[in-house]
Image 1: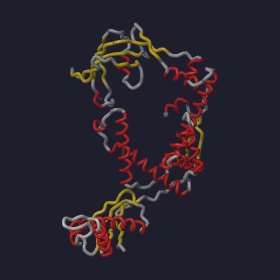
Image 2: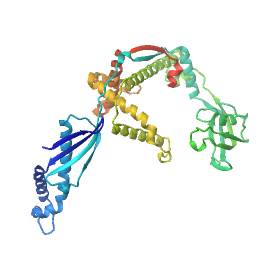
Image 3: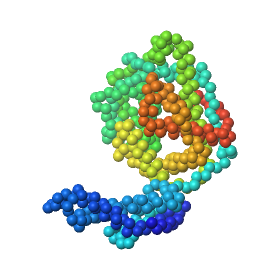
Length: 435
């Protein structure tokens, strides 16, 4: 039996000293060496006939290290369980070289424990439930977006104006040094589309095919990418072509392209409205969930283990790097400091601990029917819903995501029963834009 002593270093940090008697381990070492001797091959000896001393000489240190390492792992787990400690992260274990151990193996494990999570008085919490009814005006606005998404372009001989698509070649220079060039390859731009500095697009208005134009743009100090921040860039542009937008008519053919087989415009608008109502309901649910989560975070005050925050910070950095790669950017070229992600990591870690406590303390785990309902919801947007449902249930691990989301819905319902919930009218555009 290992001797264990536990020292409280801080609120969450513990230092545990453990002494493991070596005598019981010697038998395990001998047994392991005997197993090796049955198959080990040594020059001059048949398999299994080599002297024990020779086997020990070749494998003794390796076997001892394996047995001692296993003893450290086992004794630490037993000590944690006996002292009812919930370890957060990985322990830092320090010991002398195993070969220096005499009568006992002594090591020190330093680690953090999970905090006690206490939820505040939710009856005093105010949560706003977004309220919105989809109107005919919202349907018309959405229809206008659908029309613009299906735009085509036709060449014109006039000068360019906003909403035109132009094909240009350009060079960009800073202080007389060229920093960018398209060469002879023209690029397409739609004048006024988001994502560029407005002054740049304004300068492209009034150009005809075959003409050239030069202009300067001074970028703001907080511009992204930073290479252009605060710099004045001189652009030399050649207009290759100018094309004006052509929008489809809202007619039977348009309706058919949206999936209305008979081309009926009233049916089309009815289906658009139904789709908007589903999207509005989904976004209201998401807003409400975020409000509940924010309330839980604000009403809970406890110290976070550094190991948990560090792990979440690393996860956020890896996600950011992956997002950059998907956009064709090498993450190595974009400096990412852990401090930038720490606030979000703390919030995520805190919320995760709160949700775990709330779910376990109130038995809010999703049941099988709730998980199936979540899977069915996922399947609604698929052409063959039954195939998606079958895919989820073909591997139980695939149900982790719908189970987690269904459990979160249980938490939201539990909090809303306790909190003061009021309806707040919200505009369609605000909800759709995520403002």
